[in-house]
Length: 366
Ligand code: SAH
Ligand code: SF4
Image (cartoon, rainbow, N blue to C red; front, side, top):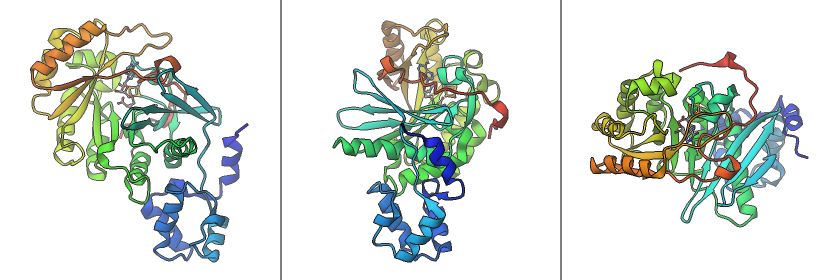
C-alpha cells in the first residue's frame, strides 16, 4: 500500500523540487554550483519526461547530480484511490496524514480537463457546497497542487492517453485564500519548461475574495471564473457568508479591473451561477443578473446544483434552468448550462469533501 506520509517524513530536510517555480529552482541550482542552463534541463526532465530519478539525468554533470541527491528530491504524492464514473470521469484521491486531496479528471472529445484542489476543505462555508460544509484543514503546498497534474499525466501516459489540456481550480478550497502557493503553481503550469499550458486553458474559480483578486491581477493572467450565484446581496448573504465581507458590487468592480488588464479573458470572464430551486432561479433574478453584468464582458455558466448528504437545497429543474438561460440569452449573454459529470462518484462541482479534520486557526482573508 502507498504511504505518502512515511515518504514525506523522510523528506523533511530535503527540498522538494516540485515546490519550486522556475526562478526559485534557478536560485537553488546556482547555489549548488550548477550552470545557468541546467534549470531548463532539469525542468525538462521533471515536466516532460516525468522523471524523478537524478541518476537518469545524464546531461547534468555527475557533481551536480550528487549535490541534488544530497539536498533535494522530486516527490509527488501518489494517488491512493481511484473512482471511475460511468461517464468516464475519474476521481483521484491523495491521502496524506489522514487528510484527502481530491482531483477530478474530465475527458471530453477534444480536450481533457483536470479539476484540481487548492486547500483541504474550505473555510468559506458556502451553504450549498459540500466542501464548505466539511470545514477547513489547511492550504495545499505548491508541490501538492503540482503533483495532482503530474500524477494525472503520468497515469494517462501509461494508458497511452493524451496529457491534460485544461486545468480548472474548481476542486476543494478557495484558491485566493492560498494565493502565494496557487500563483507559484500557476507559474509552473504556464511555464514553457513546465506543463506549458496556455493562460486561456487554465481557469481559476473564486467566490470573490476581493483584496486577493486585486493582488492576483498584478501577479498572473489566467482565465477567471467568478462564483456569483446570486443576483442581489440579500440572496448572496444568505447562501455565501463571504458576501457580508465582500459584496457583489465590490467583486464585480475588481473583476472588471482584472478583465481590463487580462489577455486570457478576452472573450469575457465566466460567471458561475448555481441553480437553487426557489432561491435564486426566478425570472426576475435572471433580469436582475443581466442588469448587474451589463458593464462586464462575461459568459454565464448555469450549474444545476449537485446534492450531498445532509443538505436541504434542491436543484432547479431543467425547464426552469432553460427559461432562466433564455432570458439571459435574450439580453445578449452567452449562457451555457453546465453538464454534471461524475455525479455517481461524488466528483461533480461542490461534491468534493475529502475527509477534513477541522482546523480553523489558520484562516486569513487576504
Ligand atoms: N472556491 C472556489 C472554487 C471551488 S468550487 C469557488 O467557489 O469558486 C467550484 C464551483 O462549484 C464554484 O462555482 C462553486 O460555487 C460550485 N459549487 C459548489 N457547490 C456546488 C454544488 N453543490 N452544486 C453545484 N455547484 C457547486
Ligand atoms: Fe469554498 Fe468555493 Fe465551496 Fe464556497 S463554493 S465553500 S468558496 S469551495
